[in-house]
Length: 367
Ligand SMILES: Nc1nc2c(ncn2[C@@H]2O[C@H](COP(=O)(O)OP(=O)(O)OP(=O)(O)O)[C@@H](O)[C@H]2O)c(=O)[nH]1
Ligand SMILES: [Zn+2]
Image (cartoon, rainbow, N blue to C red; front, side, top):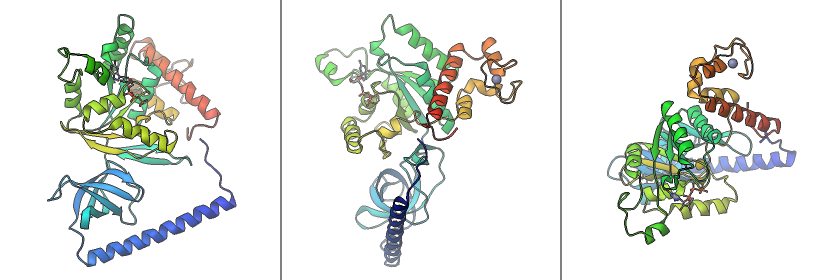
């Protein structure tokens, strides 16, 4: 996506919109000052943004008598854009309203490009990116690695979750096991799970091979998610909605995600929602977040995103080595000595060429 150039008329409209926005912000500030003076706002307290609706943010109180309650809050001027997962200092007002005064420092931030090519934050303070794969649709190493690189780039540990283990067969088991073992050997945590679709459940009397819901691997997954905030990403059809639905039986995840998609036309929505898991831990989800990893990667980020490449970076004979056929290339040397697997090297090359292709077609945002 290239940066758009605006013509005069568009520029005028943008300026007009900005002016109106400024006026609205000033009015809000005046309202807030009035409320403060009238003593209608509580003392400052800590909260977490759990959803975003236009100018209003849903903030959950993390302390005090309102702990766990959700307030619909305005944001004071001069606070940079807030996103789901942000921890904030806020004051409660009447009737579950409130005012956000400040944003606390973020541990991590997921960003995606907007239509103008600028990176916009979509979720904050995520601890794990759970990359879901399944025997069907077949997992392609390049795609899984791309998700991993994206996670490494933002500094959030990826967890590889193989879902639909009930669909493992004599034919597909070996390549999938090899893939999982490769990721384990790189130090990534892997989990295996299966979420039985409800129609299978209905026709099944005996659930003795799993937990009472007929699902498998869920307790390990729940343990892993406990006390952390996670997002689920992965190819369409691997079972992200099914997993999230199984984790959050009281929410209608599928319907929510679908209607949000339909309303926005394509997968452009950035509204993310934070859910508390009954067993502990939080999930942040939105159709936009599920696509995280497929947005953009720069060539250097790609190299560093392959964690086993890192010790070899900077040791090639040529500073501008492309790690293709150059003599004394440290990366190629590490493949030859077995420190880097052929599969990951091939995957790296494939992703690099795909990025180049996209760059040449002007689709990428930055190198
Ligand atoms: N056999 C089997 N089928 C599953 C399992 N988990 C999910 N499915 C089925 O796989 C299909 C796709 O599942 P979804 O949960 O919609 O997948 P998704 O990753 O959310 O897909 P998108 O919404 O397109 O991103 C559905 O028909 C599910 O019932 C599983 O563990 N085993
Ligand atoms: Zn090299």
